[in-house]
Length: 156
Image (cartoon, rainbow, N blue to C red; front, side, top):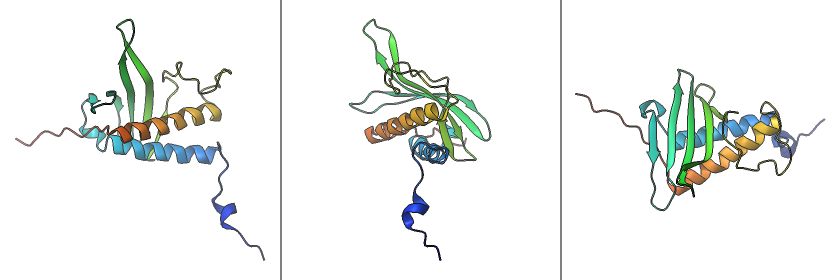
């Protein structure tokens, strides 16, 4: 007779493909909290919270099963130019209820891999690190009170 303990059933190896899928699902939950109705949002929106950096949303693509958005904070740089940081492009899979960072995101300012070489964006290592970063950043933005409510027009 074999006994299966709770630990062996529920343990998922860290940084595995299955834990990455779980991270994508968590990112989707946070994205939906941030923008509950993406179909009711304009192509560009800004969430302003007193005492916090503005959060900018650019809806790049809307399809029946996916949406692609760019999320960023916009800061005034020393030279007067706008600095976008972080500047993440996120694909939202509505049918699968998952969200992931795309390789076209600007991550050069962040040392996610220390001083080492940046892994190939198609690798599990790259996907794990950038999506973990997205997860933490979304939680931070939600904690600050950021939100993109839908802007539905009243019927005429």
